[in-house]
Image (cartoon, rainbow, N blue to C red; front, side, top):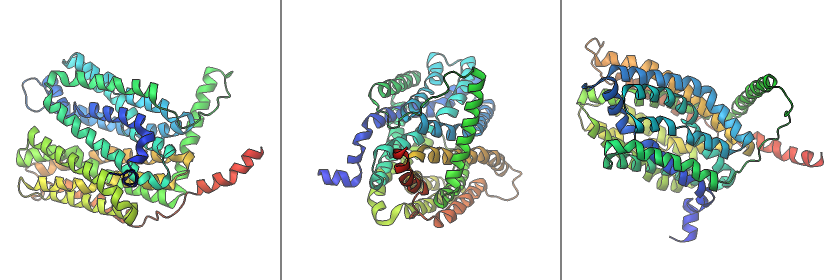
Amino acid sequence: MTRVEWNNCGLWELRPLLHLLLPLCVHWIAQEMPVSVIVDVTTNALCPGQSTCSEAIYISGLQQTIVGVFKMVVLPLLGQLADEYGRKPLLLLTVSATIIPFALLAFNQSKEFVYAYYVISTVSYIICQGSIFCIAIAYAADVINESKRAASFSWITGLLSASHVLGNLLALILPEKYVFLVSVILLIFCPAYMQFFLAETVEPAPRSDQESSCLTKVVKVIDKRYKAMRDAGLIVFSSPTLRGISFVSFFYELGMSGISAVLFYYLKAVFGFNKNQFSEILMMVGVGSIFSQILVLPLLNPFVGEKVILCIALLGSIAYALFYGLAWASWVPYLSASFGVIYVLVSPSTYIIISKASSMNNQGKAQGFIAGVQSIASLLSPLAMSPLTSWFLSSDAPFNCKGFSIVVSSVCMMISLCFACLLNTDERSNNDKEEYVETPLLSES
């Protein structure tokens, strides 16, 4: 492949991101490795000798709820801090947050350590879940030309999928007792590499309150954060494009997070699926998403645009949900999983639309605010989906449709598709125009 061909597909544009993507890929691999093992570890610790553990399920649900509540505030806050104080310090913080929880289980997997894992991992997820990718996208927007962002963002999300596939493969190859140890070693490598090699792209904001008392500083910080979050909301809702994509993201996440929360329980109850079938489905989605994000999106986007790709991806997500919810045989979930090749394009196309509709100085604020909107959806969805799924899986169901809760989730995605069709992606950011006007005034002053 010639240099021109590399440039057209977006890979050449990733050169400035080498020192960002290398540690992030290692981080994603390390974070994915324990996913297939953690259920067995927690079940064996909390309910020894049993194949299921209601205590672990309840604790996991409580953890998801707590994380969802705090992420509504933390995600926009981290995005604002990344705009004000730089991407690198926030990336170092977020990628380091997952080390301690997995280190606990690498050291000991007793009942007490599992409880400690749940407590510390809750704090870790609040800090790092979703925020790493948002800050990474903002970093990429700092160094990549706007015309090349679509291809570059698709490569980044493709690398995320590839990392998850590699993480699952490592978890299958390694003995269970070494999974957490290898994961911790890889997680420690990431912030160390970033500290030495990652360059900052944002000039930190000057500090002028060195002489203030501690209490005064705390009050100022809270007031400043409130105003910054309010400004982030104004930035999003003053732009028709950002406002529209926030509704798209909310309803899509409302449906998809609801499916994710109950899918494996549903498949196990209806078709008797176990870890092997779950791994096959995850691998099918992961491998397909690599292909679609790295090859399909960069090739299609210049011809049809990110709005069309978003709508097609949302149609794929609707089909994905309906086939799962109405599955009539054990092979149908595999057919449903194949639509992951299409619906996985929702995320990169959303990032592209947000990035193009935001000014350079507001990339972190916009990405963080909409990520916060998604966290609200991920908080609300399991609260309704879990009892609805349990009801229709029980003998007390009002009619015979065991996947009815997943069908309901598809309705949320249909609403998301309606908002996506109304998007105006040709709109330019008003903030960009303001920056051009303010530049001569600032230079004169």
